[in-house]
Image 1: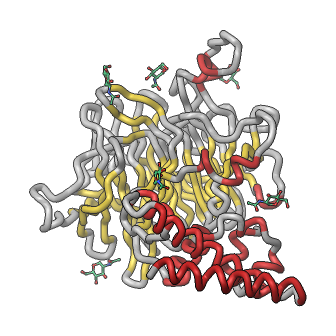
Image 2 (image 1 turned 180 degrees about the vertical axis):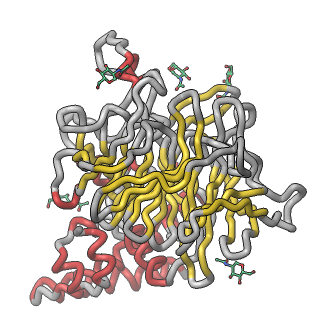
Length: 459
Ligand SMILES: *[C@@H]1O[C@H](CO)[C@@H](O)[C@H](O)[C@H]1NC(C)=O
Ligand SMILES: *[C@@H]1O[C@H](CO)[C@@H](O)[C@H](O)[C@H]1NC(C)=O
Ligand SMILES: *[C@@H]1O[C@H](CO)[C@@H](O)[C@H](O)[C@H]1NC(C)=O
Ligand SMILES: *[C@@H]1O[C@H](CO)[C@@H](O)[C@H](O)[C@H]1NC(C)=O
Ligand SMILES: *[C@@H]1O[C@H](CO)[C@@H](O)[C@H](O)[C@H]1NC(C)=O
Ligand SMILES: *[C@@H]1O[C@H](CO)[C@@H](O)[C@H](O)[C@H]1NC(C)=O
């Protein structure tokens, strides 16, 4: 049966080749390409029926909620590269990533092994522990590019910064140099890579600046950049400072005073979620403690007040049904037609390392353990970012494997929700035609690829 199908396909291919020999019809070229793929799959199946893994690789399957390794080392774009050049970022922790629908950006990071692995020299200077780098990962072509490094104007605080992508502007705030806590930052840097920015420019600000800290977290709401929490290595706060973006003026909106009020405890390496009026502080810790996720400090931007909100456990998993207390985890949020959801992955509590992934429904504060979703190994000091379609990317961090801690440069992706059918179809097309990103914008549009996806290939 398959053999017959293969013969029919081959005949069709021959027919199209003949027609194209006389009239060069572009649309037929695409049909021919699809045929070629089908022929490849069929031939593969006929020749190698037992090899289920190979089949799985050959045939596209959409795997929502599964953490999948992004094999950028073997991508076409990477293999085509000539010369030595740095092809992808080295293993790191304490870096930050953000993403759009086409690109992941990675800033900074730390690896004490770094100076040992630098080619050829026995240089062990401590500043080499940090990565003064801004990398870009092309999601469509699966290829990394080093955008900026120490030849450009970059901050020297490169670990546990806070980072955001706002429109096409990257914002990097705070962070620390090495040794941690010695040189902390309260500066805001911005960069527009799509406009060809060659530096991370410091924003000139006025007003009452937040103290220099690291491990803080930021969000932008209603023209304000909010920064919450952080540490200078000794003191941990959960103060709220905000920068009015149009006037570039800082103010301290809320100073936590645990000794006189019931204010939430200071912390670092927590993460923030937000809705229209409130900011939710997810986890975090100090050098020797971590915070529970059963109660979440919630800051109301309108009333300038803190409130402690209890979360609801997942009834489908064993008690407590709530993710364990953690810091150095990752956290992204998505907006589906059902509302806002927050996805928390990995982290550690100083003793235990986590590989579980949880969802929090922000309207009901209901936790749900994502049963199909697990990191391949416990991971912390990594970072995650999510596309508008809900595809979460997780990069780097320290993995706990075989009783040792090793920094990694692996990139994972996980669909946190079932996206639109067109998005799944786009993934399938990229799977079957890996050379597609090579086509010009006009060719792609003419082939009927919707503009929103063409824009992801050609920014
Ligand atoms: C089947 O696939 C395996 C693994 O990819 C390969 O080693 C083997 O040679 C294949 N067999 C045939 C008959 O192609
Ligand atoms: C801290 O920053 C100052 C000024 O930028 C610099 O001179 C000093 O070397 C830095 N210290 C460390 C430990 O990086
Ligand atoms: C959150 O929970 C409510 C009530 O169960 C539900 O209506 C809503 O769809 C949920 N939101 C998401 C994003 O799942
Ligand atoms: C785990 O560590 C032990 C001892 O260091 C080593 O012998 C073993 O090969 C390691 N196993 C794996 C899977 O890395
Ligand atoms: C540093 O490198 C050594 C040797 O390559 C390795 O055993 C160790 O796990 C690495 N440590 C980290 C934190 O990456
Ligand atoms: C992409 O285009 C370049 C230049 O036209 C060509 O050399 C390369 O082989 C193409 N790659 C693929 C995967 O088609």
